[in-house]
Length: 405
Ligand SMILES: [Zn+2]
Image (cartoon, rainbow, N blue to C red; front, side, top):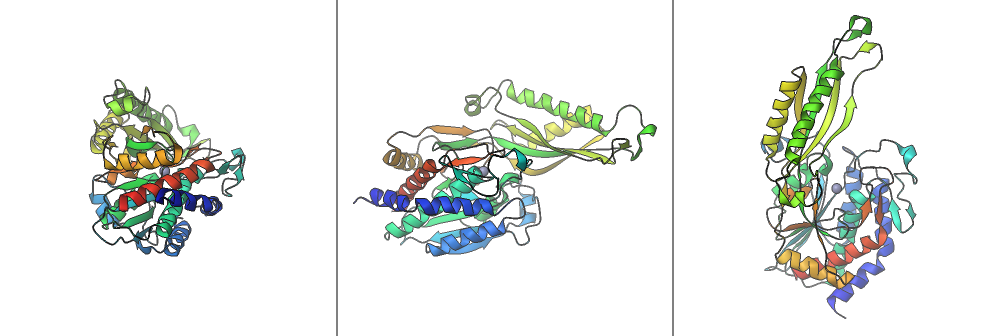
């Protein structure tokens, strides 16, 4: 029996376990600040598979000082990434498999067909918040790592598996894991790429706009208020959005779609009563861009636009200051992963560029995103396809075994 067949068979025999693990991870509601119960599951899995496990906590001051790290979103007290290492005998190439355990919150549970925190299995899919983004890919990587540990006793390179947090709002989980020395000769990230090789991602910054009002009865107010000021600031930022999308100067993202660099007003807050002028209104904004811009330059441009259009509005930058990045489309990691993909699926994998950010921007050497088919990420009725989860695990097991052989 070839090692590829033994690995594929090992994954197939753990199919039920893989589905159960995704459900288990979905049921712990690992939104921002609530990641530890999910990390405990990952920690136990890695120890069970024979990995040496450590926890990594980001250094908030160091993150603030790094122009490419995230602005910490919450205190890091009691919040950690999990890193497992299965040492090789030496002299081989190391591989780092990673995923994030944090998920975005749910706005309207009543709009979901399957309860979002239950991990229901139906129609060949697992449903729930985080099933696609990205507990499915993380579970597939954990199963792949366990199968490699089982099947390949003889490996020269280290196999590292990490489960990071705050990927959805800054990226300081992965940033701190790499900074702690867990770099490798290749990195795979289990984001749901639909079994494509994700090699590029846009830059992203987040901003918080706020406008003060004179708190008090509306009978004293006339003319513009804080909402109107925010509206002018948002309109000015839309102009910047249009400018960087016409034309799109980064050819990788120009090929994805007509306006690849999106701006979203994702959250608004403030006010308690219709006939009371609010003390403050705020808008939280996500802004995307390509490799022809730096995060700091985009921040300056947005600040200038807001100051000119709505001097009453304060702009503050939070969470992401992520640069756009792209990997070369040829090289040994692409070759190894493509060969493993062909072995399992019988076809050549496609390349894909994402119009959002991911943790790959922190990796200096070869790094690809590769994960299952999923849909409705960040939306209602998020799901991950079970067949593609098993295929992800088999492909990644074969690639990791070959790379670290
Ligand atoms: Zn993700």
